[in-house]
Length: 400
Image (tube, one colour):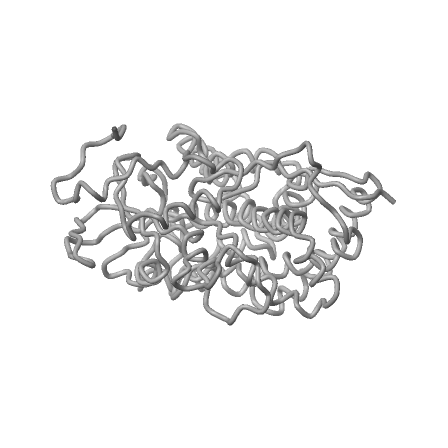
């Protein structure tokens, strides 16, 4: 018996209704990707009655179409349910042509030259973290490394106080892996309130940081609206504080549980760029939604204007129709595009920084801790939601 939160609409076929809450479903707390993978045993597209009702696309081909066809599948309000009481996340929740000028404000901050300048700081910070971690012989990876390397780097990029780290992480966690709708409302509200004071400060005393660039940006001959500014700052914070930390943690877990994978990287560091793409494919992170712009048919299904469809990047990378033996990490896998950073005009501008942070982690961690594992009496904890994440990852090795 399906525990419905809203009635099934008349146009939804009864055989496509599933009792599936993407925030809380069997197995998501121990291995979130394997738990998502079970959806491939069912229909390519199904409907859930939770969170106001939403569709779920499970196959790479459909996800590819829906990521890029903004004429039918709009990016406005990418969460399920939508957060309509707060400014849209810019440029993520804007469709072309509005999207392009907003994205152009962010892109220069993540170009090749800025990344070269950031790399030295990244490596220095990583060394500092590892100097503290290595002698212990053990650590809880998420807090000791994954939530420090990218997040301290991000806070420096936007020139926000390091003392605000824990508060911002709390808001981000509530937003990307909420246990209730109230969590998500509190997160968006708290972050909106936080950014308002920095908008005022950076307009009065602008610097060379990314926040100052956003706050004082112009599109043509006009400044950004208050909603555009607030939405862009919130988007930058949510992206900078969580997604890379999650990617590092999933990668570290894979290396701890698969010594044969780790051995390949130890034997040949030239594999690292390929390895990064394979880890991003295997351990997809965002689960964002699209909104139907009008009534239309898609593969025999009737979609109605205003309905939402979830596009789990996890299921894109684990689709055996696209990737042979998708659960295996295979550095010799033939190249095929993954969906980790989106596609088309909305491809994530921070992807260069994310790859750089993963590269620094793999190079320096494996130099210092080549042999590590998860203690046999411990179990990692993962979670689902708008963003998949690792909540707890204990690691151990022979201390120095």
